[in-house]
Amino acid sequence: MPAFRSWRAPAAKPDERIDWPDAFGTRFLVTVDVEEEFDWSAPLDRRHRSTSAMRAFPAAHRFFAAAGVGLNCMVDHPVAVDPASVAILGKCLEDGRSEMGGQLHGWVTPPHYEVVDAVNSHAGNLSPALEAAKLDRLTDALVRAFGMSPRIFRSGRYGLGPSTLRLLAERGYRIDSSMRALHNYSRTGGMDFGAINARAFRRDGMIELPLTSVYTGLLRRVGTGVYAWAGHVPHGRGALARSGMLSRIPLTPEGVGIGDALAAIDRAVADGVRLLTFSFHSPTLEPGHTPYVRDARDRVMFDRWWDRVFERLAWHGVTATTIDEILATLDGDLALSSRESGRWGRTA
Image (cartoon, rainbow, N blue to C red):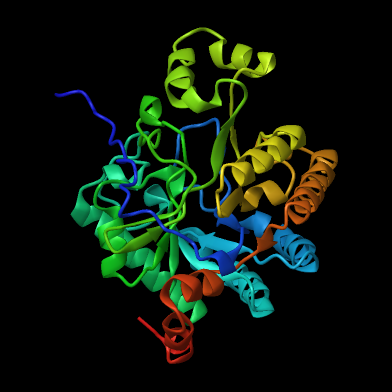
């Protein structure tokens, strides 16, 4: 049997890049992978579909709403078919700034024809036919649950593959945010986004908003090559970070200290990134489900992380945005008028 070869996402070509108008300014978007709980250190299991951590979501939503920040909720199948979770999210969506999107965790989304393993957990590694079938089941569940069609998508485990954008466009999605800039998951059966930077672009009929990651440090201009090389040296990346030579920092409170996060924001703004995309996972909101919030103290620190981040963004003049505003900017009034003319009442 031939060895598995990871798919590498091509860098955006000049004609694919999005040039934001001056009036857009510099904005930020907060995305949440709204999903079931499972043991992140154990093999994936289709039986793990509990969504009990959703009880922590309303308090988190109030926290972000008080800061004027909407939550872009990438909802996966176990959540979409759980009435209690749907009721919670439905109330949050009433704020006028939050958005319901889709997130594909293939191993818990029917039809179940594949073996559950590390490679197949990245849906883009499945056959296009099976990936499409799972997308259909997910999308139909979201439409039934929320009475509207999702416009934004994330492939769980950053599992976007060579067919995914086309399949999404065919199903009416407008925006994808599956690519994690500067990250390479090929060692664990995933995709290689090492050639993708933090800037938005268009491809295969979709708008791609990569999850923001930047290089900081003295070697940041040659970061991709040096970071890849350091990954083959024991403790190489840690040594580079401690020395201030090179760090790769994603914009997330999960595993990223506040000092690094603020440095990454400063760097992204200085580099001219016009849309900063943050992310975290919904089970993190309740202590004990992810490695990032293990107890009540961690949960308090999670909110403090965001307080500091919002302060730094405001200092730079970076404001929160919404999917409506993004589409209106890129498509003109057509984006808003199409929503008003039927998206909300659309059913499967």
